[in-house]
Amino acid sequence: STTNMNHLTIDFRPGHVKLLQEDPPAGGRRVLVTGASGLLGRAVLKEFQKRGCAVTGTAYRRAGPCLLRCDLTDEDAVKTLMSQCKPHVVVHCAAERRPDVVERHPEAAENINVHATAILAREAACCGAFLLYMSSDYVFDGRRPPYGQDDAPSPVNAYGRSKMEGERQTLRYCTRSAVLRVPVLFGEVESVSESAVTALWPKVLRGATAGETCALDHCQQRFPTHTQDVAAVCWNICRADDSIRGIFHYSAKEQMTKYEMALAMARAFNLPSDHLIPLTEQPAGVAAARPLNPRLDCSRLEVLGLGVEPRAFASAVCDCLWPFTPDKRWRQTVFH
Image: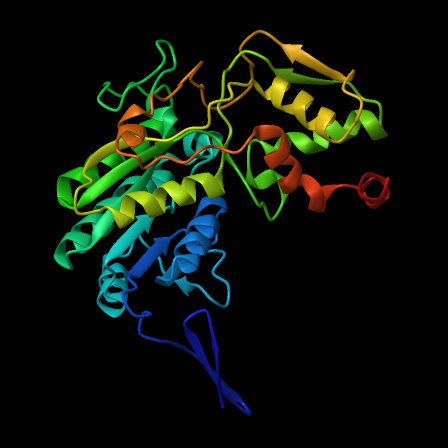
């Protein structure tokens, strides 16, 4: 027998289960999302499914039952993937996005952030697909904000350099392409460590439970942005792909240090924050340098009407952290 779910047909009988992808819904597009097991990729996958597209998601280490396992650094594997999926649109979210990991393992990071991007861009061009490459505000050094779309990149670490090079590969090999630079992201996380924003939550809780003080950076300015908002912008760009080319910026507007993010979390959950100590000097002991204030000027996106109103940080981060709230406090907050 077969069952249908989200444009996927599952054929099952005793001892046999097969996932069959149906043709896209009438008027729908075939969309390929790389890095679909990651924080941003999951949100993009959901957004395009919600819009009625036939979406194929790829992953590698974390490929689940509804995702295709594909090593994007393997040219033959990417060729096969593209010939099977025949996508109208490719949203390239796959990346090594942890700056300290990139600094320690530059070759592996270069492979996924640059080499895989070049392969994907060439293959997208071959099959006539529109390619949207997800980039980062870390392509800038953060010394002279705000940064326009045409300002020259000036990365201060290997991660920023790899994303800059990925942008160049995208625009070089695929004429029907765009680059979307975004800041630090948060959203529906599988674990709090998945985002540099939600990773602050255990430090907020520590004061409420163990009473330990915790020093947090109060120097580097960030613009925490929700993945659902970014996913909606991706949809807007891809929907208008015939007229969209080049580099775009999207960012939430609230400027915060890590210390200020942690304070906002504590306030949102009515937790003490006296244990949080602001560090006003650049932190020592990190592998990769960070830009001071890489604020993005998003005017190009806004003029074209492709932006979305970013959700407020306090309420959005509250939604993300609910599943990681200790049971007792959860009950008190919900029922009192």
